[in-house]
Image 1 (cartoon, rainbow, N blue to C red):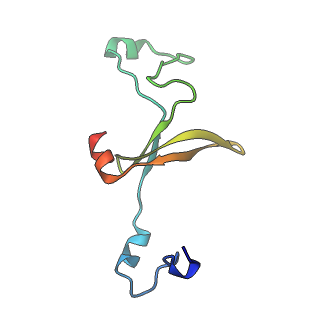
Image 2: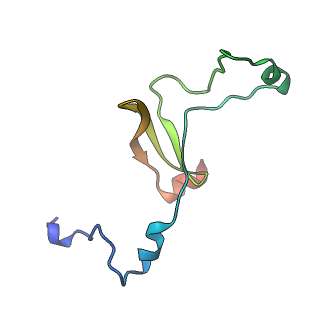
Image 3: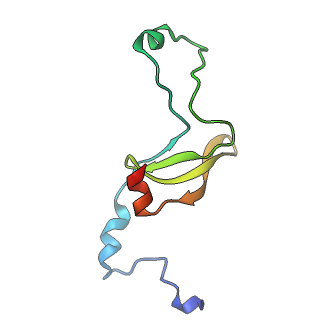
Length: 97
């Protein structure tokens, strides 16, 4: 594909989608989940370990405004955690999850 046929990265002032570029979206990376009774939760203290439903190396779920949109791997970027996207889900896939 020729470079001149690619869509512009920067929105043009007349574009209808231009208004959406400043809309804030909350991104959440879900490492895993756990179900436990309240009695067990009340016994948790400092240093307690809660076992999640994911294995080490398994992809995590990425949500945008509480909707599953992608899957990825946890990475370390300097002294912070980050996520490398490994799969961006299509609209039909997000509705199933």
